Structures are given as C-alpha cells and as structure tokens.
Length: 236
Image (cartoon, rainbow, N blue to C red; front, side, top):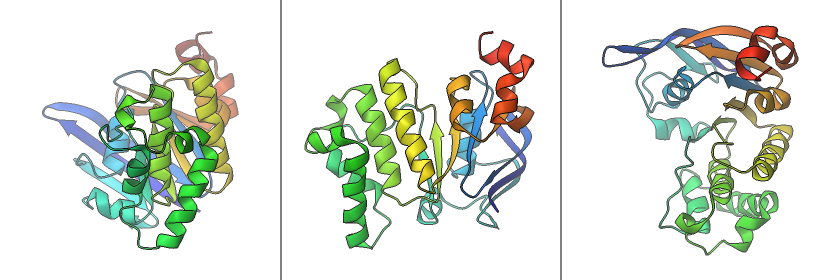
C-alpha cells in the first residue's frame, strides 16, 4: 500500500526551478533512499512534502489525501515527521525538554511516557544526559536527539535529511543501526543521504535525483550494481 505518493512536484525559488516535476512513491513499511549530489533538490523535496516550502505544481498524497497546502503542524498530527538537515535541536533546552517538544501534538500522556522510555532504550546516551543542555552536546549526540524528538511524535512516516552529515564513521554506524531498528519496528522511512552506498545498503528501493529531476529509480541492490551510479556516487 502506498503511504506517500508524489506526482509532478515542482518547486521554485524566485526564478530558479529547484524541483522540475518529479514522481516518487514510498509504500507502507518500506525504507526508500533518495540520493544525489549537493543542489540536486533532495532537501527541497522533503521540505515540500512536509509543508515547509510551497509547491508550484504537482500533488503530494499522504495516507491517500493530497496534503499540498496543509500546514506542517497538521502533517505532524497525521504522523509525518522530519529530521532536518543540520539536526535543528533546541540548543537552550535540555535533552528531555527537546524530546517533550517532539510530542507536543499528542494527548496520550501514558503512551508518551512509554515512548520516552523507548527512546532512552534506543539511545542510552540521551538518558545519561537527559538534563544536559542540547546545544552543549556533540554532533552525533544532537543527531540522536533529533531522531528521538521526531520519534516522540509517533510518526507513521519518518523523513530523514542527511543523518550522517558531519559525523565520525563510528557515530554514523550507530545512527544507521538505529534507523534500521526503527524501520524494522514498522516506521516507514524516506531517507535523503549523500553517502549513497550506506543509504542504498539499508534501503529496499532508491531514487537518484539530478538537477531537480529523478533520473533513475530501482531496487536498492540494482542501483548499487548500476555502473552509472557506481561511477557518479560510489566513487568506483
């Protein structure tokens, strides 16, 4: 079943066409990678899906409804969460306060408390530092916090924008191990990631985006074996 279906999406900044009419689909329970070079339009696409930037044309169907024009907070309430590029934690708030902010649309307080315990299981370091100010944490710890905050919204679809950016290899592995675990528990994931090899290794399908267009789509294994992808994105 299709959870997210994007059709003919166009996004412009001034006179620049950043996204030029793309189609993509994410089915319930899938992890799908969207890879491409800097400036390809990947982040802009995620922002349009979340209602952060307006679309010039096209449709975004989430859970069967066209959500173009719907405010971001309403999409969060419907189970769509974004972990933004650069993490975007609330630097002056504590770890626990950041996580509480992730659940601000929810009224099921007992379930929120259970989810907080679950986040601390996924990220023991966050539990150790629950009182620490988020802005004083390392980049990897802030990435854990950003993912945890998004999960506190009980998302059905999780959009991840460059989760490995600026992190040491060991921390990248920890983050991706957690992303795999979250996906295995039933959360559908659309992953934007410059580390194409890592993104395709954890995903079932993938799309390649170049200059605002989807130029390739296939199973993740086929894209890993594709000579064009290997040369352009895998350094081979």
